[in-house]
Image 1: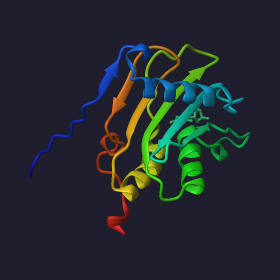
Image 2: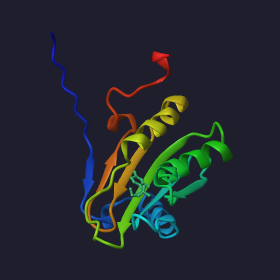
Image 3: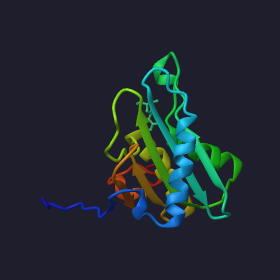
Image 4: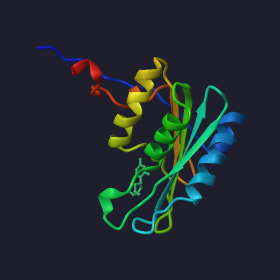
Length: 160
Ligand code: THU
């Protein structure tokens, strides 16, 4: 038997004023995308902004459906948009913003497990990590150096 320790180091910023100008600009874009989300059922809106290495910014937001599981998260809308519009162009950063019209979201909202798995495919494919930054509507921002650092023991093509 052996035990291993899994650790991840993240940076936590107190608020947007501590972000670099590029990160702040991307967070503004994620907020812009979030405001256009279609979330009539959960009232929980999420926006995602991807910065690509060709300097394109690709936005996504959650799109809900009356048949609940048929909706889609902001992060996967964004990553699939990037993958379909700019195949082969590397992703440098993913920035996420979330808010609710029911409660004040003052804690950073990380990507859900299904999104982490979907996103991991792209980080592995491009053989280069991308940074992930996430926040709620207000307050702290968490920044990680790579997507895979948020998904230990992820499933990938090497198992197939
Ligand atoms: N949602 C996202 O867009 N991203 C996440 O990572 C978590 C959840 C959306 C899905 C659904 O429309 C709403 O937030 C509530 O779960």
